[in-house]
Length: 61
Image (cartoon, rainbow, N blue to C red; front, side, top):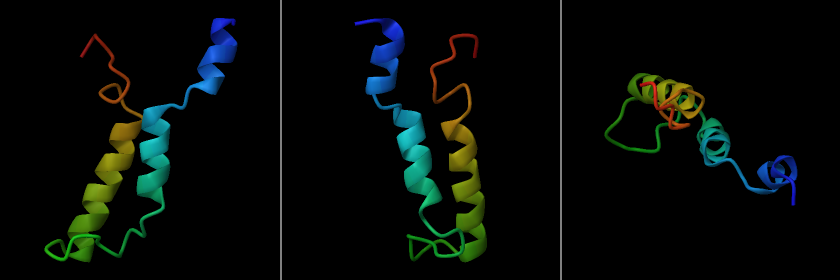
């Protein structure tokens, strides 16, 4: 199997997490101890992380 085909068959964990976090409404905190405003900040940071170097194991960081 070519590496190009294999990479399309294996799910990207960062993309899966991004999709799951994106499905949680930004103003409806899933944690009762987090205000809506704080949750929106946490959610946005999590979405940024999913496409950042940390999520993809960039060795230069």
